[in-house]
Every structure is written in structure tokens, then in C-alpha cells.
Amino acid sequence: MFNFSECGVSEVPTSRILNGEESVPGRWPWMAAIKIQAAWNRSISTFCGASLIGPRHVLTAAHCTY
Image (tube, rainbow, N blue to C red; front, side):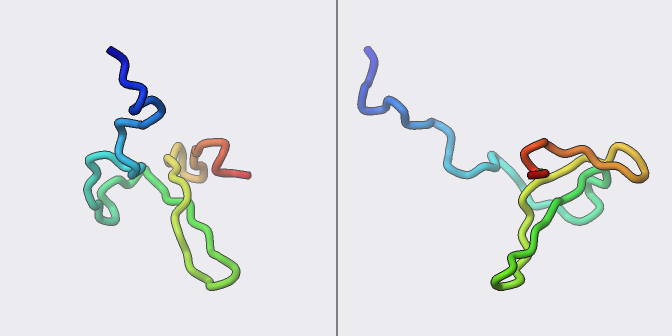
């Protein structure tokens, strides 16, 4: 029987990373972090990732560039 009280409730945890683990610099050398600096407090945060596809090029998702 369908449970309407659970309709629209995701079974996935709210975290965007599932079963993740800490990494150290150099462990994934083909990956890049795309970061942004906030104008109001100068804090820096990662907002997207990218893959190195050549000596001078990275590939990222389109939504990361606008």
C-alpha cells in the first residue's frame, strides 16, 4: 500500500556527498576545485569541480560557468 505521508520525502540524506571520505592534495591529480571569493568577507569556498583534460584545459559542468 502507498504511504502518502512519505510522498515527496527523499530517501537520500540531505548531504550532497554520500559515503564520502577526506582526501589529501595530490591524491586525485586530474581533478581541480573551482573556488569563489566572497566580496563582503573575503572568504573562499569551493563551488564546483573540474577534470583536467589537457595541459592547459579543464572540463566542468555548464552551470559552474554562469
